Length: 149
Image (cartoon, rainbow, N blue to C red):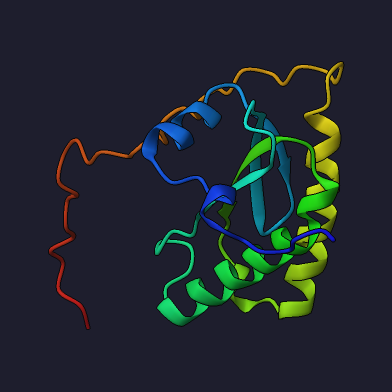
């Protein structure tokens, strides 16, 4: 019988595990999640979660999202190939229902698994976005000192 546990061997634990995935990963995205993945040689899929406080302010919401992601991964782990996955959240994820998030995650596991198969097209190299142009005030604005009536 297959085990549906989510033990230590199914998690990404060290920064080196995460940094390996951030170099030329296969990507899949929805409006609320970005998943990065890379094949591994370990013999089972592994999951790493990053839920930034910037994207999800309340700790109880961050924990809810991580619980949903772990549960979805746990139930779908036997359908996945040997890949390492990092799940990142986007803004607005904390406003979604559990059913909506679970549905999106289930789609994402399948999509990501297809993109990591041998022979799948190689992803484009990741390019950082250029910095936003910050308007600088070169000179103080002149004030109109005329009396108001």
